[in-house]
Amino acid sequence: MNYTYILKLKNGNYYCGWTNDIEKRLAAHNAGTASKCTRSQRPVELVWVKESETKEEAMSLEWHIKHLSRAEKEQLIAGTLQVH
Image 1 (tube, rainbow, N blue to C red):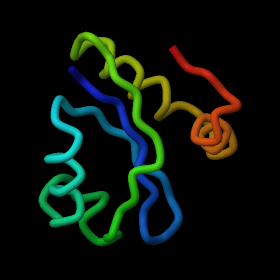
Image 2 (image 1 turned 135 degrees about the vertical axis):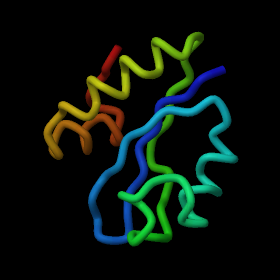
Image 3 (image 1 turned 180 degrees about the vertical axis):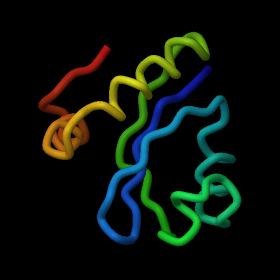
């Protein structure tokens, strides 16, 4: 499976990404080896995740989420907004 995910960073900002191994990717973010963006904002907290059948679906969903406003991301995390 492939996963699109949202992390909450130490500074309160959100980070969106995709992976095919969510546990390994979360551990890499918290170790500071996954992204320059999250390296200085540890620990990170996984606040939302969605499975996709293909890498392309996960990447497309990541692109759409990155274009949402902060308020829309918070609605998505709360379950009151759906993205496809």
